[in-house]
Length: 78
Ligand SMILES: [Zn+2]
Image 1 (cartoon, helix red, strand yellow):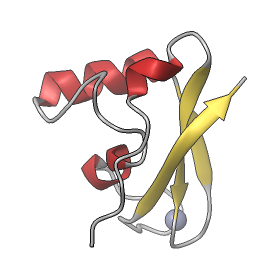
Image 2: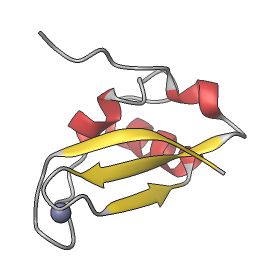
Image 3: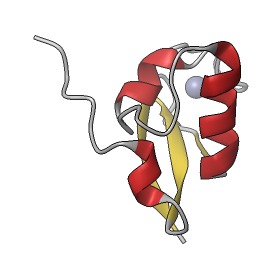
């Protein structure tokens, strides 16, 4: 069974960014919400309606520390 996609990114506008946590080494990185939405739109894979947790499955860039490609995503509240 797939994980639920989570709350749509657009819901967090003005409230939170997106925290990407590498499942390999647990290093995390917070990105601006609009940057994430724009990136998904540019690639044609999602946008403001994409669920916060589903973003984890759309990451292309491996972890800078361990090279891992599996991530968890969650809102990063300011
Ligand atoms: Zn890592």
